[in-house]
Length: 119
Image 1 (cartoon, rainbow, N blue to C red):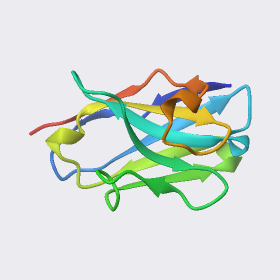
Image 2 (cartoon, rainbow, N blue to C red; image 1 turned 135 degrees about the vertical axis):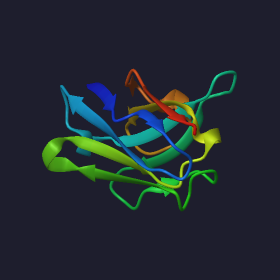
Image 3 (cartoon, helix red, strand yellow; image 1 turned 90 degrees about the vertical axis):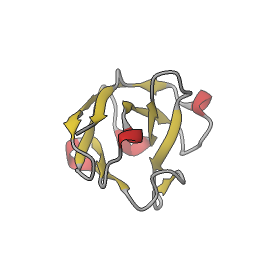
């Protein structure tokens, strides 16, 4: 399974972005797909995960970020709203057999996409 993120960029505070995680070599429906981010000098943070049930979110992004799966496109999205400068980071998607906050259980990772929130 290969994952490729896209959709990052520079956005002003309060703005929005939608990140995509496109898969090849496998079907995302068979996995829990998590979104993570890592800011310079900080540990990688779990943001959300979606599998068969309702998605769940980390405290820092709940209510601002939304994840959804498009099975027809074999893609998972992360919609980012009301962005803040502290959201600046490299954003990654990853696949595990089921949703978990344990990053060690994710076997497949994308290369990441940079999100920069700045005026």
